[in-house]
Image 1 (cartoon, rainbow, N blue to C red):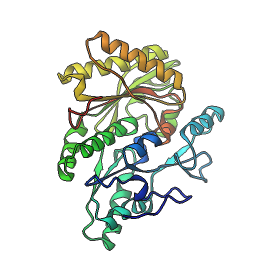
Image 2 (image 1 turned 120 degrees about the horizontal axis):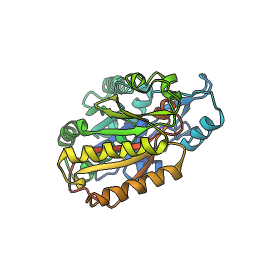
Image 3 (image 1 turned 90 degrees about the vertical axis):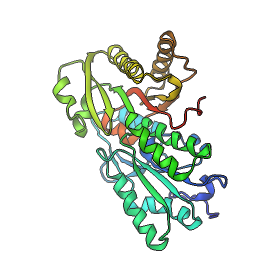
Length: 323
């Protein structure tokens, strides 16, 4: 097993993340927005995105710039629009190569290809690694999702791995459940969606009417308008209603789903929103114990602005993994 440590440039090596009891390793690009501590606990490698505020100097997210600092700069530098950049093929090579050297199969989960070329970087890296290690087993998956929902998807992969599920069986199950993923969210205003070119169909619904905010659904890699509203309370309540409708349509118990709340700059708002959602879900008869609260990272935050808020929900890989 490779005994190198992570160098000062933030490269990832197996001695930090791989557990000898596991038959394969999980890698994700940085769009998964999982906390650094949780990534280490679950033995997952994350290949970071980059973010820049001047279009020249790009910093690795969670390595050279923290998420809190990223949002703080957005709030303080009004009118400055940061940009994100996907991981390079070389970034993925550095993550794949120690696994290939050790003969460890890899499942690499990437942000939806509708939003980024990160998956292509990973595919290119796989071919580069196989030039030296022809037998390297590296499966690259288009998650068709992003941000905290991608994080939930990655955690489902980890849960299946930890349960003893095999490599190919886990890949097959991941392909089965990814179509069940949904994000229901709103934003503080239309500014960043318009500037970043991610507004798409939403623009025709919300327009530029003063005070109007969109409610957006992401499914199978694309965003769709799900309504508009004036004021934060109305739009966040609509996002909650969309979650309730989704659960009712699924006809399964809530224990069959992984649900998380994603927030941006405002932690206290995120907590209040999560607590309200728990209260409503319990009133509706759902025996839900907790909902994780996860911060949306720079890869998506550059498009939503500082105040995205909403839910990610996806079917669990194995129903036994219930906290």
